[in-house]
Length: 140
Image (cartoon, rainbow, N blue to C red; front, side, top):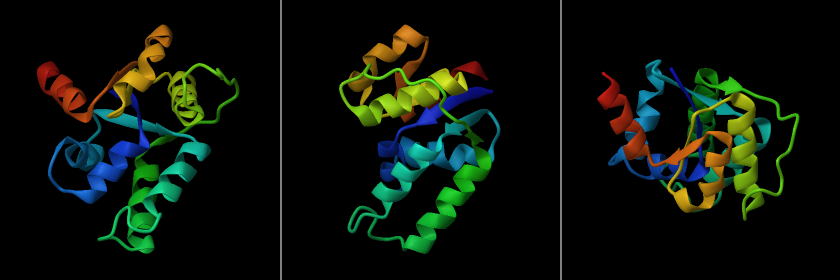
């Protein structure tokens, strides 16, 4: 089982369209070949971004709560005890990297690969949902 951290931009893409790898990745939560890690700060970011007016126009706040609660039920909740800041350019990205380190995740799933270049220093690979899904297919 792969331990992963899902960046907020992946959830936004998945909830905006049923097309593409982001939606497929989130749909795969029902299976057990990967386990996302979540921290309280990342979960709060998910909620804040997804509930911004106009970000996910086809879902209500209750719909978003239900999706996030389901995701949380499938995830490992981690507390961050040691901060690696500053390591990346964006403090929000540092939060994601710190969670990946604490949870011993192997991957950060994101569209912003270049923002996570230094994650390799911790043995963590930043990859897109397409790459991650292809990785699973190649291991079968």
